[in-house]
Image: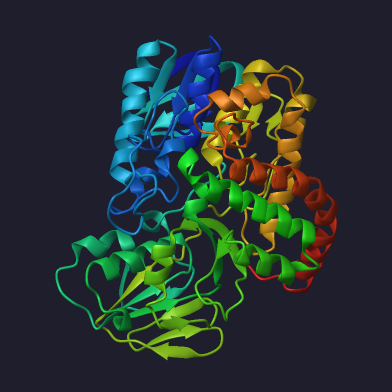
Length: 475
């Protein structure tokens, strides 16, 4: 057994997308040295364990690190994302982060990378595959890039019983199938479940052979409204206008979601079923059309047990067979619910400061760390936008994001940084531009007029949302 002593300015725990985006800004804006520690053998975090057909669900053009493009600035010409900005595959994301490490970070001479290592706390870590142990003298701060604890099917343990003889697998195994089954049961209503169903349909499985176990229906974001290109201005900014006007005029929570749906901001699977979940999943309208081909949607809550003849719920059961494949999509991608101060002494816990944008948030927090000294001001600028789970969390996240955007607008130089950071995606679209059309300027005017009215109406909606949560504390 050997102990090696290291010294660095910043120790970054995790070389996933968050840790990589944070390190990238430190390299660009400081002269700091960095040690990065990760359990995986390659940078990319949970992408190392992802299923082979996974893709980003938002455009590649604002994912990754700020200094290097992931996107080739093309649009998909075929498929369910046709006409919109490309969505990088998992393999492309992994190759991208490997290139960033090999061709940007390590050649800088300021990053030392320790893959296949387990961090124990207090500046100590050890190799997973040898007897090497390390202790680090940290001159500045520890960066916790593992807050999101992203869960994927391959590493997830289901929270229900599975009897012997049941065909049960994560969706990672779908491409390995060599024979048909009696049917396919997708367990889980989140983005992973969506991906499993779309894969089965794409591979010619009859929709009547698919059962979708939906513990909670979800609200979805329309991907067309997330396109960071001027060609989509009327959709992207139009959705922001519809959102602000809905918040400004909504009489209550039900009225709010009705307005958001009517304005094209949010979508759902079944217009007759009220969603209770919002995780920020982003889908295209073409994907929604495919998902609606599944008629056997089971809404009996969470599974408690699967045996060879029945799937059991807290109340009731449905039939299954020994030759039915049950696909585990029950993991919540980001299971954490607690929030912490981003800056606290010699530690930074990277969390979202913009709704469901962890990579941008990591880049932003790193910029604040590099350019501000006062911890109180840093935390004022980097207020956490809580990760959504329940449907009403959409309101909480919107309120927190609006507060942050207003604070940032008052900070000298921050707007210019946002405009120059490719991970931001949207600030440029809302800035005055002499090339805007009359219609585009009219949208921007509506946005400016609706924003203060939305801020004024938000407390009423937040109060109602909190009352709903107290009365219906669903998980």
